[in-house]
Image 1 (cartoon, helix red, strand yellow):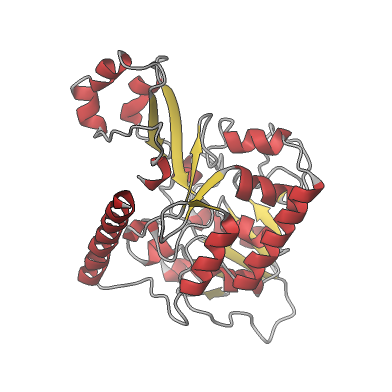
Image 2 (tube, helix red, strand yellow):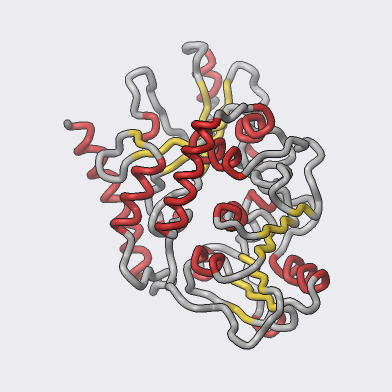
Amino acid sequence: MPYLNLPSIQTHFFSINKFIKNENHNKLNHKVKSQKILIWGQGKKNINSILQNEQFRTMRIEDGFIRSIGLGSNLVMPYSLVIDEIGIYFNSQEVSELELLLATKVVTKEEQQQANSLQQLLIETKLGKYNVGYEKNIKPLDTNSKIILIPGQVEDDASIIYGSPIIKTNLELVQIVRQKNPDAYIIYKPHPDVLSGNRIGKIGEAELKKYVNDIVEFVDIIHCIEQVDEIHTITSLAGFEALIRHKKVVCYGQPFYSGWGLTKDIYPNSRRKRILSLDELIYIVMYEYPIYIHPQSLDFTDPETLIKYLNNKKLEKVRQIKQFWLKKQLQKIKQILILIFKIKFNNGN
């Protein structure tokens, strides 16, 4: 794994079920005291026995916020990850390393200027997390109403399960947004993982049209954000991407960027009381928390370098999300082979 490719680190990969069944964790207990277990995301329930073992230091890993060109569910390699030794950023039920940084870190003027420059770069390049979809005008020409964008989410995603105390489904979200904004022009955008057929969260079109004025599917989320007045979301990263672009953001869950005085929070998190500037938020989220690697060398890099690289490599006009099943499987195999080749090539040099 490129992110752990350091001389002081030895990495072992285990199947959780086999790990527990064979009591490999007991054998590892007798090794060095610096033994750590790295778990993707929140992890499964069957790892609770391992997490309760005080002899282990548990760390969690998850995608960063500038990830790739293409979906993770299609096995496109991430070029940014976070590794959290306290919790994980999408779980608002517990403190994470990111929340602790947001609550306590003093960001210098120089760091704020650096964050502002990164913000301008993101605005200019129109880069987001996945960078998939078309460029298209979605703004209605015949309305003076407030235009609201609702980005759909994957409903069984951990960010909703652990980051939203009340609203748990896309349908609940569009219903409450319409209730609170009866005269608004509401646009709903399904999540790309749902559109691709990889994850759940689809709302039937007939039901959806009871509450929204328009549905946009294969359009780049950044281009959607640029054309609307407000973003209403449960916990979507689109809310953070909208803050970067100076849009009003209303949160119905408790995403990592909520609670710091920059969003309107319907169900606020009682732990978050500090008021941050946008530059402070961007610096902590983009510089202090994630790790970035260069797509070619797989060496560690900075967000500016990665953003410029992805901007140069992204497809010109059409970045297809929905594919035939066979083509999708072939693309996944291709992504795996590319990663294996890159790792072997770089290790050999």
